[in-house]
Length: 500
Image 1 (cartoon, rainbow, N blue to C red):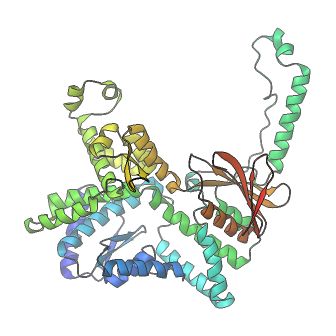
Image 2 (cartoon, rainbow, N blue to C red):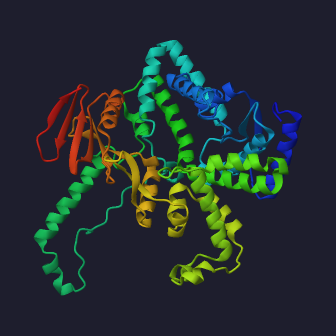
Image 3 (spheres, rainbow, N blue to C red):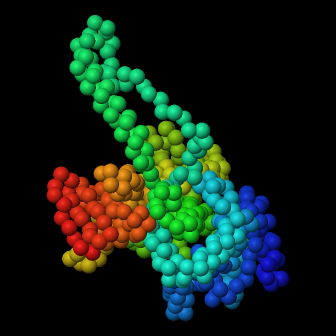
């Protein structure tokens, strides 16, 4: 297949059949043998051989090339979520490494095909990326490289301002007229004779006027509901030229394509690692390759004390789920058992583990995966703690081993990729055509420099002042950029101005 040597092709056929026999269900997978320079180039492009021209890809390529030359890192495998799937093997790797990569890739391909969070992705993205590159190059020829690249800079700086869950929400194409609920502002009365006392006429009139005012404001607010997909809103409403709308559209399409990979990083890598470990040690390796495999596998699974390795956490959690469901260590009876000896020897021999991990692989993303299956016993066994930086010792030290705190910390960094959740509240703020954003504050303030640059770049698209409401230093504040000055105002206080 592709340009594989006869030896590699024979191993590919054998490993593919082993994966199928184990229950993995993959798209057709095409392996290509490429040089280290090519694999660095493709990795810089996000795994694709062709992307639109931009300096960030060159910067990433330079970083990967230097890391490889200095022995700091090495790319072993790369696979693309398409149909068929494309995967790359690097020339010069030992046969054991190539077999390891193939087994790992088949785990990824099964995940891409069957996990529900990848179900809405464009399986022909290889062609789409080439199409995007052609469109951008045409605009560069027409309007100039600097003009188009500067606009790309702006779009890429806000490419994360999308609603990652919107592709999975089914909406009716028929717009329903708002249903007005009569008297929904009246207090509930169980006795008729008390009606005039509980809901006196003056109160009823006041509540009716308030309800009508709220309905009017909602009907005339733009957008009528807060909008999380900021890129989509700007595409349709910002004063942009046609070519700018097209570029913003393709940036948004690519952002949605890559989003599931960020939403399932721990699961995806854990699933592929689980299967390469299972298949390599039981079906694929010969005796002379065991030591090398153990060395490379251990290096991939290594996790620093204050770090988080998605490969390690993912594979161990899948193994833990399989063991628990094989032994029946789930359900109400298990949860309510407080006998340490009984829990240690608990084994109902249900053998449901393999079925369960395939079910989890199908329906979960990282947040639900951790939320449902991370247990206190798992955290203790794998030494998962919350760390904080000690300014006196200049080191990270364990802050707490409390299970709830550890779980909350992991979930916090996985929710929205650990990035701020921002919505558009009003596109005609104070009736002046200004944009009003709101930040869902979850205990951590936004970084002022990142926030100011984001406001500046949104302004470049909206062409009108941009505001954001957030909490800073435990105080609700309104930040504004009007094209020249940044204004900070604590709510209910006079604004202060800072010239950019």
